[in-house]
Length: 129
Image (cartoon, rainbow, N blue to C red; front, side, top):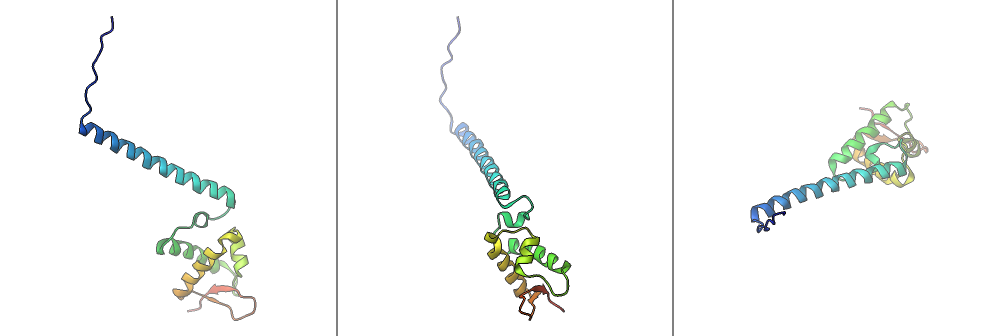
């Protein structure tokens, strides 16, 4: 005949350990959901869009990262520079991300690294030093 084992009362330390394990698992699941959201956004924007603009971060570090990419693209452009549409097309950015691109250009303007050409074409280029 099987023996019956009486349940023991749960201690506070066991409950805390269980709570810590559960909170760690919840954080891991939240990180996985966030990664999946970024992937779905990438699929929505197109697989060729640069990851910095798929889910644009906030703050100075994210702006500096995106601005350095914009600066590198403008550095490879010809002397007259690139229009906003050309720059967005080069980076494969949709119209919904143009305002982020404009904020990145304003970040570079504040750093005195790019300028707008004086022509009517409204092109952006690396500032001559």
